[in-house]
Length: 87
Image 1: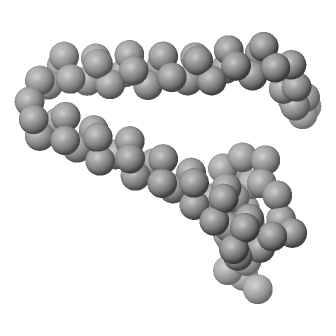
Image 2: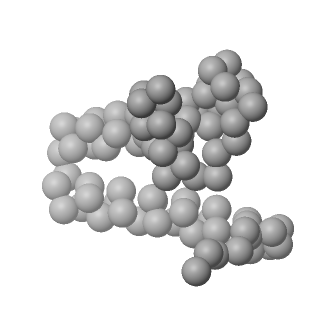
């Protein structure tokens, strides 16, 4: 059963806010659990790296590698990369 695309602007904004809250709360809990500079530094690097990967998957690939392909999510990006490797 396929899930319908989210199209209502209010729900899209709510989804973004929930992602932000989830990231802030989980980061804060991690730092409370292990409050040291190493954990904080590694957390910053991990967040920055995942943001750059997301940018790569959805902007760089679509604008510079394969302008005709549109990804609906990271799963589609992974399938695209596997299929491209097989060619």
